[in-house]
Image (cartoon, rainbow, N blue to C red; front, side, top):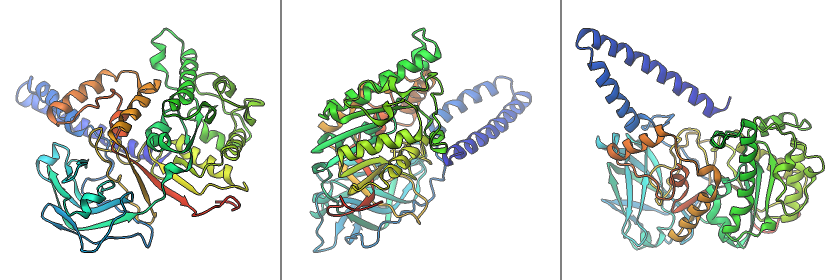
Amino acid sequence: MSRKQQLLKRHRRNKRIGLLIALALLIAVGVLVAWWLPLLFAVLGWIAHEAWFADHLFYSPTDDYQYSFPPYTQQPKVRLNGEHLRLDDGVMLVDDATLVLALRVKSTWLGRFFDPVVELAGGNHPDRQTFERGVNGLRYLNLTGQAHVLSQGLLRLRGRFCRVFGEPVLWAFEQPDYHRQRVMVIAPHADDAELAAYGLYSQADEAWIVTLTAGEIEAEHYQQLGLSKVEAARLKGRLRAWDSIAVPRWAGVPEAHCVQLGYFCLQLAAMQAAPAQPMGSREAELNDTRLFRQLNPFALPGDADGAPSWNNLLADLRELLLRARPDVIVLPHPTLDPHPDHVCAQAAVLEALQGLDWQPTTLLGYANHLHDNDRWPMGDAGNGIALPPAFDASLAMQPCCLPMSVELQRDKAMALGMMHDLQPPMPFKRRLRRVIQRLLAGRKSPAYGENEFFRKAVRRHELLWILKHTPGNVSQRGEL
């Protein structure tokens, strides 16, 4: 059982216990006071839950985030003078560096009912970064893109439903211009590449998109067309296979660089456990990947027998890596992103790279899902992305933040809108919850689409993590 599954299990257990206690109290009120009071309290309690307590937050908002950055990372000296964040005299910042500011954030009493926000003001690119309701601890703001206004001494930090205080600490992470390199994005499912790195791959000198699975399961939406469960799963897989090939064309990626491997959703872990054994689809009644690989621009080793096995996956990846020879590989982060297919996708790439006489210079990790906070990135579409919750200071982390213009955010939103898996309407309960939260908690719905990923992913930053970087030419180096 993954850590996130354990957290969900504990959350649901605590929720059931709380409901039983509340039910007992309501029955007592109905017996001792008036029969109609429990009905009124139940309705008000449900509305309060949907407005303020429906988020999946598996830690206390008063916990300090704990990050450990690489040694010798530049730490320009800064001080907080009222609302103004000022650099010490003589400190210079690189414009395209990733800037991270640690300071303490404490919510006001209203910040328990409305999302606490730190506003970055004073320049031409104002930003808002959102934290947990009831926050009271160390947090990490993302100041990437604010180097110019900070250097001028004009950057102001304003708390809305919160205040910022303490001794600020700034880190500056210089990074190469990854847009000028050959980039390969590894996507466990169609839409993962767009969610994580559309801005990067759409501007790269050369880009490849490799999607590992057809994403055919959970096809209830297509059963509404009168299809059986098997027929719906096959249709969904074919549609998402099409998406994985067609949507990157919107960003200018040539068709010859878009590949769908057609393995089956949520089966990668089983494949990894028994590398030679084929693992068929859970819902599509298929044991052959070739149905979902028909649009590929060239043949791959797995096309010989279509067997959905780990060994075939590794052979496919090695063929693609040697054909493309990317400078930068973008893949799921091994600890931040808990989705089992994402974990296995990262492991498959690392295993495929072993023993090759060519190696990439950089591995960048992304997290489209998170262990501890299902709402992260918090806040509205178009806002910045503060660093996510992290509580293991023994793991060295190096963020790499790439700014996104408004025009690029719009193009990214259109790419996500083309993805069939993000198109179905939300269930009635989620739609009602969104209305309640808009009215009582001041939350905005994303303008580009109903799906929550339009809020999470269409932002002024794309936040990636440097997992490996080897300066210079490493084409003759050995294993990672």
